[in-house]
Length: 362
Image 1 (tube, one colour):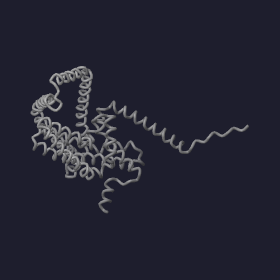
Image 2 (tube, rainbow, N blue to C red; image 1 turned 90 degrees about the horizontal axis):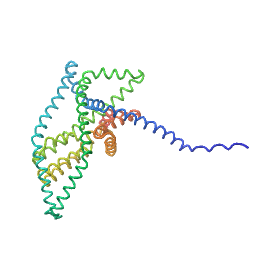
Image 3 (cartoon, rainbow, N blue to C red; image 1 turned 180 degrees about the horizontal axis):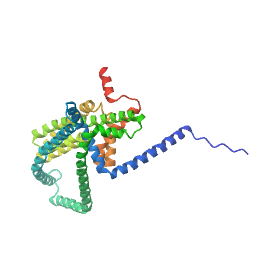
Image 4 (cartoon, helix red, strand yellow; image 1 turned 135 degrees about the vertical axis):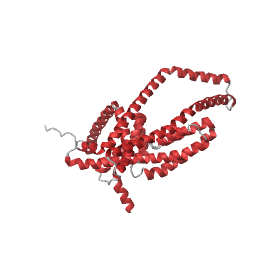
């Protein structure tokens, strides 16, 4: 009696299985890599902050070298310019913040008193006993969560320490990257087989173009947003205007989400300190500026360097925030843009500079 042949696996299922196990293998490798990098959070943050800073300072150092400055002097010149900007920003922001934070605290207490008064005399007409009971219950719940709150404070303190250490390390690394960028690039390419060095050099150039374009474009958008919203805050007399302006500028590095967060913070402070009318005005100004940003500035400034759809940006920002918190959200867009530039290279698409020249020629 002859054996019956085993049933053949459908070709579609066979291909799907082949793709599935490769996807699982790559996913497992990425998880292991992510866990490894999480253990090196401080180093990763320092390298990332240094590289972002390099995208701004390296062109200045190269410009100085083309003007005849020695390499070391050009590095110190660009580095000193960056430090000067940070010092000026700190002088402009920190003293006003310390001077006005007390007034803002008083305004919050006054707003709480007005809210309690409105609950008693407003439409709800709650009795003082009901309001006091709700306040006491809220205070009791806060005390019951004291352990959780303490754990959150300790975790926040650890994050602050990690950020400070990473910034100090980034300051040191930035100088060496500015001074020895050519040597570091040659050393990195020396680890690659000679017949593939041109390939990796081109990939590195594209990634650098994407990240530097993202950083400079985000800084330009943030400067415009901060200027427009800052004029409104200053004219209205909103307390903590300079810190809010700085927050608006930094929010530009978190596309879409950062602008809304900064706008809500500014509107909330205006409403608490100056009344709900001022809060609505600030919210309207922020909304208008954000519309200009998303419909005009981002397509013009970032569209040629960061080839990511706004929906994709939201997805990667959300994923980065879930996986790595605020740092993950900060890394999400430039990392995704870098991956997109590598994929574009292997698909045979021209570099962003060539695309720009081609479109201009048309």
